[in-house]
Length: 321
Image (cartoon, rainbow, N blue to C red; front, side, top):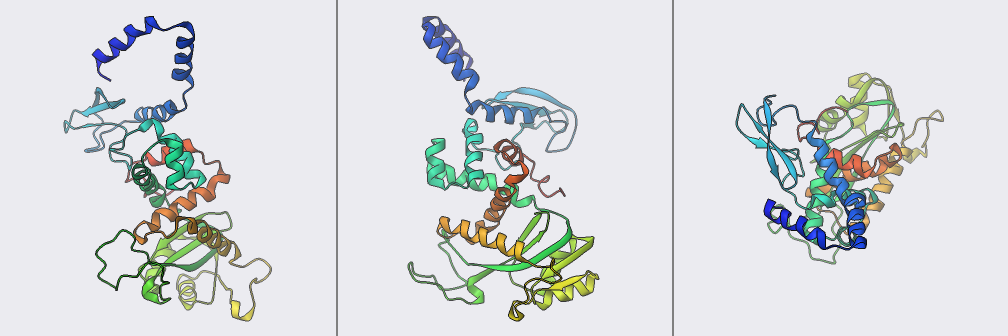
């Protein structure tokens, strides 16, 4: 708001009645929408260096769009707390906390639109901006008993008008179940609930090994199905390996080694994703990260924590947790 407009607003306060002033005070102090602005503004206090050149010589440089701006004395560039974050450039910051609650509850775009009072296109744009942070923040190490398995999702080119690798499908007709129509996802989870997932181009030995190797701690026991790729990986890395072969009706080995926890997680994931009526393959990683956050609700993940996660720098999202 401009200074002249603000002065005119202050002059109008004298004409308010007692009840009107009391109602105005309640709106200013107890409005939950102001909390999201406070979270973003408090994120400004953590500024210690320029995001452009990492120089510590910074100074305050006025305000813009309700946020404090800073200027770097070295590179002369200005920035705020949203610079180089996934939420940079978005408006209606006062509604971000409410929208974070909608994401934690897994609401659809239409329901989020009604709750937050925003346009459906805005709600869809916000969804993938908010989800880009959980997508990059994956678990880096697994401990104890680790379960690994692959699952598949039907390829979905929703919104893509230039499909060149296959013939377009007609609406209402089921797709053929072949390898070209399925997108493989590698799922890894330990008994502590730590989960990591990777969207793969195809199931190949080297690709799977490259994703599994950084996750394995020194003392782990790998539990998988009968796929020979996992057996070769465990043999190469000298990791204890327990194979669960369903054809032999052997679902538990030594009363403790199984992949039922991971299979239950995959089942919950696919059941939850059905309500979106088909997820575009280009957004699949975002939905996988969204589900990881929802599964961690038992670890006291709140809407405030979720908003703070979205405010992380893009290069910080890839750091080990």
